[in-house]
Image 1 (cartoon, rainbow, N blue to C red):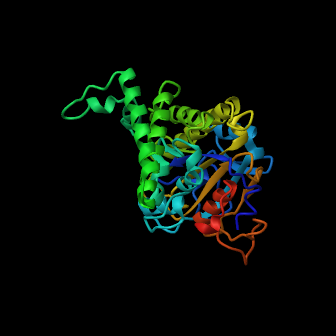
Image 2 (cartoon, rainbow, N blue to C red; image 1 turned 90 degrees about the vertical axis):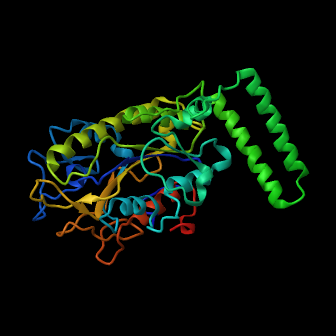
Amino acid sequence: GSSALASAQDATMKFIFVFAQGGWDATRVFADGFDIPGVSMEAGASRAEIGGISFIDHPNRPSVAQFFSQYYTDTLIINGLLVPSIAHEICTMLAMTGTSQGTAPDWASILGEHQREQYTLPSLVVGGPSYPGPYVEAVARTGVQQQLDHLISGQALTRGDMPVLPLRAPSERIIDRYMLRRASAEAFNARTLPAQRLADGYHASLEKLTDLKDLQFVMDFTGGVSMEAQSDVAVDALSLGVSRVVTISAPGNWDTHGNNDALQSPLWENTFAGLGILMEKLARTPGEYSASLAEETTVVVLSEMGRTPSLNAQNGKDHHPITSCMLVGPSVTGNRTVGAYDSQFFGQTINPETAELSATGQVLSAETLGATLLHLGGIDYTQYV
């Protein structure tokens, strides 16, 4: 049922996932609950509309309206998305994989795996969750303590209980060339198919390692905590053809069981400010196949769950299995909001062919989102969903 949400299949499409950990309150931006009894909307908030995008505006969140005014034509909001759990870990798994099995790969890993031969680090995780499943070879994490950067540069050798001095660059290059020749010879002389596959895989890994060593002088793999710093790594990785998919994290902890209004508002403002910076970077950075990365990148903004419609005794909001998400990109059916919340603040069903509300339609779910993303990436989603 992704045909109504995605307008094209494109095996060259790149992706940036922006994940808000903790469960966001969709009524701050995406969900209009003004006319739904029992929904605690924020004081000072109001309905707003730019093009076909309806959203919640607030004086404390100017970056939201600014973002939509610039990018509404390529933006799709999905409301009433079912993530059938209220446990953080399970919801995160469901949102990213469509299942709680624990062994299934997430959407980012699948997208990276299908282009694994073309990219050194097909799916790069700078921040946020990752479930590689069987596609662990396609996924790399930068590490909160710069682990990837230290592995590439050789600094990791100096951090153990028995520090080892790295080789000097000329000696290292000699050894690298020698190892590549040995691996190639092993593959050529292999007498069994498993031995040949092992040798071929080792040779491919050595080639990627050589690429990464060269890239350490071109891009920064250290990332950072801020969304802007993570975006720098993401844009470099996509522009230089290092990765097809990058996952970053939205700022802050969104798990607001107390003092919901005061805590959620700056999180939304900082996230949309960061998204604006990210989109500007994509627009002014050359793409791999296009004039700019913005022409070949889909940005996926999501959280693992929503929050209950009403405030609790601590003026917070608890876990809710219905949420919203946002897609921004050139192949998205933009300038549109799909789905809605009903009188109980659950998701309304839609016609899977038109994405219009329908009493006899289907529930929008994490699987629907995953099917859409895989379809956008030129992948037959029926293999996975």
